[in-house]
Length: 342
Image (cartoon, rainbow, N blue to C red; front, top):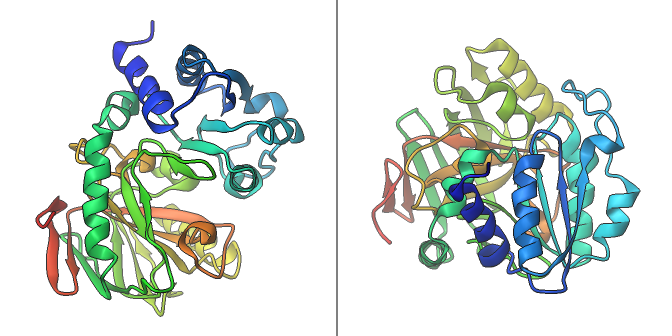
């Protein structure tokens, strides 16, 4: 039996965020573990009058946890997606699938100007939390933060865990991307939503990730507050030899991903601020925790089509920082992950 909370969260996604209309063609891409949640999204889309097709990833091949043969994005799904105006990806991430599956899928989303809800590693609790948030409030807060950072030149971030870095912002060259739950044609956004991000022109200092990581790291390692990972940034890149972590396996996998994926996987591609005030605590799931008021950074792709960056990468690994303080050109706008100036 599906709970009322799950139904409400699914309706928020379909009606308020994606604004699905009667007669629209829609694709939902899911996996066996997440299909029961995809089914609620499917039902709400049908209630909205959409023509919906649902795909289960395991029907197209194996998905090994070790990433030895990551599932490639199937032609059948690609052909269907090209005829849709709206889509959702809601599935658990596997090692290697960012490059083999999700990036090719998102390229089609952008090329065909599809409204896309992106929900990697989505879990049931998010339906009653992030997806149940007040999206009018999220849009208001995100705009207020944008009004401040869009005029910024330097943003300094410190944290109780020991982070201390400064980002140089070039608002003339690189765009801030508002992710507030209002998904428009030709755009995709993570759901739950509530953040604003950019590519920093430069960034230097110490980063202590003590929340959780993204991509396949999230499911494998979860909450890393007891074994935080530290790295140094210099001229916008992660410094080789600077990575420290008491969890030797996490340290090794992080270094392999960061320094060996491609020539830009060690480059800081995303500086982001969470704006979803409806979230009251971190749950060690990147998809929702990156929307919690605070800061997260991602090494790898800067989403060039969104930010205007002139480079890309097949990597993208977000890291959550707990209890952050943000200074914008010397003015504190957040202290211990609570906004003070909006």
